[in-house]
Amino acid sequence: MTPVQIADQIFVLIDHWLIDQCPTIFQPIVAAILPVVVILGLFPALFAFTTVLERKGLGRIQNRMGPNRTGPLGLLQPVADGIKSLTKEDTVPRAADKIVNFLAPVVLVIIVFLTFAVVPVGRNMVLANLDSGVLYFFAVGAATELAVFMAGWSSRNKYALLGAMRAVAQMISYEVPLLLSATCAVMIAGALSTTTIVEQQARYTGIWPHWYVFTPWGFGAFILFMIAALAESNRSPFDLPEGESEIIAGYLIEYSGFKFALFFLGEYLGMFAISGMGITLFLGGWSAPFSFLTWIPSYLWFFAKLFAIIAVFIWIRGTLPRLRTDQLMNFAWKFMLPMSLIVLVDTGLWRWLTPGAARWTITSLVVIIPYIVLGRAAGSGKIEKRSYRYAT
Amino acid sequence: MLGTGILKGLAETARNFFGSFVYKERLTTVQYPEQRLPRMESSRNFPFLIFDGEDWQKGLRCVSCFICEKECPPKCIHITKSTEKKPDATGKLQFYPEAFDIDVSVCMSCQICVEVCPFDAIKMDNNFELAVHDRFGELVLKRDQLAKSNEYFNSIHPIEAEEVDTRLAAERAAAKAKADAAAAAAAAKAAAAPAATPAPTAEGGGA
Image (cartoon, rainbow over all chains, first blue to last red; front, side, top):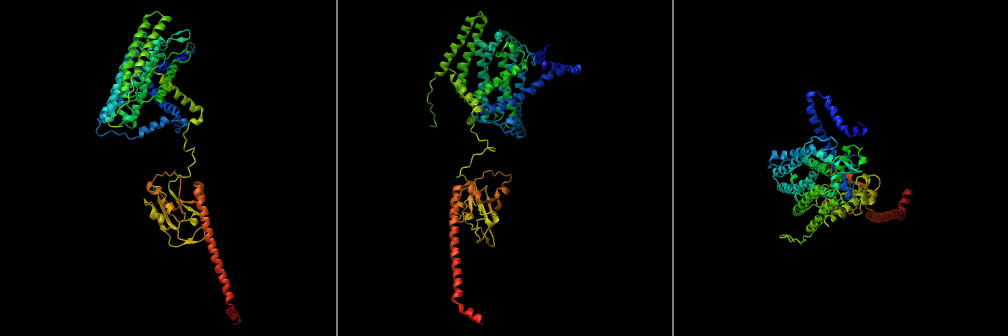
């Protein structure tokens, strides 16, 4: 093996070496547990890093310094937050359904961790290379709605229930464009296995990669996927289920201490997982953006892309205000759904037309013209002066 | 076109983000414990007792007349009057407060005590870092915690302090002039008295 290959496969080699050190009868169980332990350690660490990054980034966007009291540059803020959430009193409402109330954050975190199983973080670095990896990801990921609704229902609080209802309505609405846009990548790759999808994109013409995002349909599908991913992970501007100013943190209202921290963790891990899936489907997973950069280890590329997407999420959170529920639903059903269906058709055209400039022109037009038309339709709704019955 | 507004917004926030690294004047937050803004002269929170000179026990202006205690709306001042007199900063014999407590957790910062004090002995402070661990013990400020020098008063409220100082100086000068005049008159009387009655002395001398 060349040094470049060793650097690329270093964690795989360490994994194999560690398994070889065990007695033969334990090897299967060690082989199963070891990558899980890495995921359980790595992504929460990334979560801790992201919280401080987000607070610093949002602070800078608002011309503030952000947290700067704990440790150098405030980098120990997650430690302080962790200690605080561990030592806070864990209150449960007297009327709450205590078992479900306890299970909700646990279920959320378990489900979110399960989704990481099929996200390839590097070459040969995927926990389970399932033939139906994409299907598994979305099937498991959709179960987060269950956890959110458990939290909202069991709290026995009207705000919590409102938040949970909003969450379920939003997640179900955005699940449709999310799946349809993911289907585009699956159609072209001809596989549901995440590893195969990445390998299809990790090829180069000249120096340019075959990432799906660099095609007309892929670009459209990627944007749709990311908007739906924002909505799925309940992040601003789609944070209606939490809506601090309206329903006081929604389904989280009755949670405190470590259960709240678990919800927070689950939410961020869900964001990482769905961003990782977006990277896998459209941004070429662990592959380098130029053929001459392939010597950089594959896992570094994956995490660089993940970091970039999280930075964009933070940027969007610092920019856009929260939508109203009717705006959210209109956007989902009147814009996202038709657009994702059109992109799906466009993907079919791309598959069957002969490669060349004509294919590029046709598929580009098939995406751009409906975008402009639908955008006009979405923007043409007359803004009427709202009249309120009981307030002036 | 749909989305252009979002792109404009993203550009604006990006400008804020990078601008805050380049232009320090964008960061308007004062990093409080390290940086402080000068306090406005009119700022006030709780009263304190002024003393003249170096030693607060000698120079306290308060003569424990109980006016502030009686006027205090929330009744947060407690005074114990001394039994004997001792000389104040000007050397005049005065009563002094044996105990002077202000419960600053009760005080409502109305400044009435300052307005009614005929001796300019109680003034408003502007120190706001008063956090303590025990509300009932440590927030009841004692005489020694309340006594602060006239120089300190000059440093926090210079305009008011200057007015008070000129007025007090004038009053003391007038009092001193009056005392001097009285003393001079007494001395003159004393000098005149032996002159008017030389005979007994002479008589005595003769005897």
